[in-house]
Image (cartoon, rainbow, N blue to C red; front, side, top):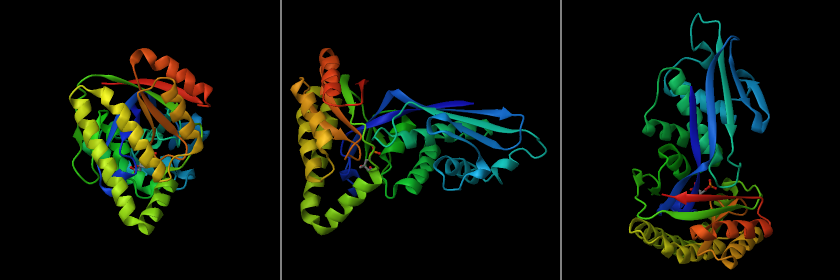
Length: 315
Ligand code: PMV
């Protein structure tokens, strides 16, 4: 049984979304996590994730291991006794192989994509395929185990593989893209745990609540206008909104010199606007470009120190 899940980018609203403001996120299908679950002649559940050099039997991993926890969660949700007791009387076991082209800890949703693909492949393999809503709920549980107080935006956009307008705790809303547009993603190559930047913003918010509430309100306005612009087929309006959103993220202290450098380089190379995307401090930035200008913006990002770029069309 195979399953694949895309990466994602947040277009607008990161951090403010943790405080119940709306955010927009879209899947990035150029990168993905892939999981295959197969019968195996040897007993036990063997996990192979060459990208993180993991080759282990499930029982040898701590239960809170990011991959073990997904497997255990699937079994407990389905009220199946224990993963190894999957088939009473069956000598054989299971091989799970996990590969991913999504860079880790960089704001592209690598953890959530592995969770979603693994939940789908494993639940289908044991003949209990889950509905999208159930997959999303489970993946959110896993995000909470590993990321403190996540909003749930990553697991949602990745589970549904569609553009989403997301408000924490509210039913998921997708939105239509009136006219496709092109985004260049630039990776600083700096791995920056989202948990830390989210934690730091929380401390600052506690200390300076009214200013931070104002920042979050401004970001919410930007997300609303952005959604309307996308739906009405006016994506060119997003450039200025990205620039504005980035400057507020700087005020939240979640940008970094490297992100600012890439954002500046993209603008100088003709991007219509640019901002960091995701938790910040490292990870990725995004730039809105004319399709024809995408390659030269990507090149400018590499010259400014980006470790890799992805050109993706939002449709
Ligand atoms: O770093 P990412 O792409 O996982 O995004 C985090 C987005 C935040 O708003 C900063 C946190 C969250 O849980 O929504």
